[in-house]
Image (tube, rainbow, N blue to C red; front, side, top):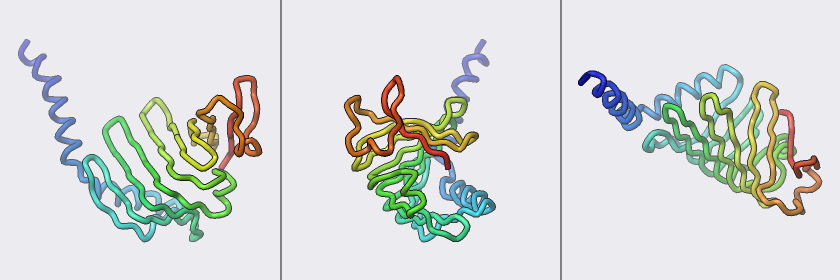
Length: 169
């Protein structure tokens, strides 16, 4: 009976220790090496560690040698079952500017296994939330406000449930 009580305690302590002593910088460099194999380069960044993750200052993202995004800061949080990337003040190239219109202040992408990839944006055109579908290569966002979209209207599609934004990448 004592063993049954000790197993959950051991699992909780192991999880907390794993999060606290996780080698965030090494995990980031491993991820960077893996995405380099697909032609994606994260360049000119200053990497610093934080609890359960890393912070990149002034990174530039290049795909096949073409710069597609600069950002002021990217914060990556890596937990066992919760992963989050916060991009602060991204500046997109012309190609990606057509996918995410307007000046964007912040993008938050969250991945939870078996729950999918969710996305929230804060931009001059308003706040939006939705999901990313990597299998169908689709970004689907809906304005947080229920009123008429205003400046976003030219980018949005009207449905029975309201307005939404959807692009394939």
